[in-house]
Length: 307
Image (cartoon, rainbow, N blue to C red; front, side):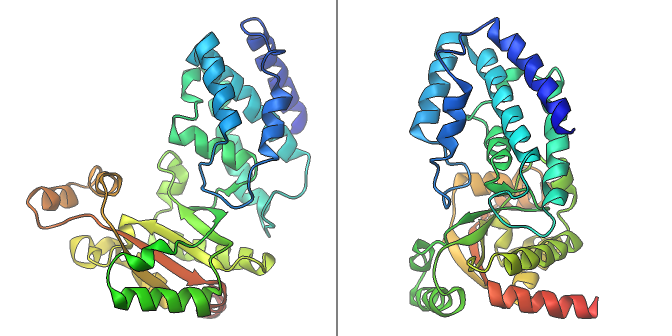
């Protein structure tokens, strides 16, 4: 959808919402200007106190349906801004390729009759959508990326060996903790999930290496997830390619503990892992990976030469 069509969509949503709430009390411009105050490096789902307060007050005054309609208008405003500017936060070689697919998918969601209340910060899906539209998250596949910092606390979570390995990698490979690209899984993005395969991950690493070449200040890549767990080589050998790829890139994999969220993600769609968890033979565990920019770029060059 091009900018003129988005302007028409904006008008349609504005006409609907202006009949049901006082937009002078909650100006769209005030909401959008708040994004300019956001930190360049933060958690992917960061929401400022001001935005939370505005959203909560709208929901209190008018209900979740009107809040969702208001957020649709915010998303369309951000989409118009994206279509009118050449650069988005992170310099990309193929910016249109990543964003346009997601924008087309989002516009369909905005224009259909889906429950407006699903456009709410309480939902992970909407937090992805708003932060992609403001250019903070790049919807690469099968993992999204955003600018963040490498975790330092993880090096303390096991033993001295992990501590020294982690400290060495941060100091001499990453050469600092920020900024780095952090990996994220968006299970609501069906296309991204369909690309969750060995070829998909290899292509992702090639693309991130290319992005790193255009962003010299970014020190590398990090991510934390249950699927970086080395024990998956025995538990789910079909996923062993992920860690094999990290090792190919001379990356580092560090123990990061267990929690309810990671356990749920590891077992809720896989019968085999669920049964092993239930009989006590498998405990889903989070691991954190570091891959330095130099190592990933060198791997990408070698991979392209043999492909």
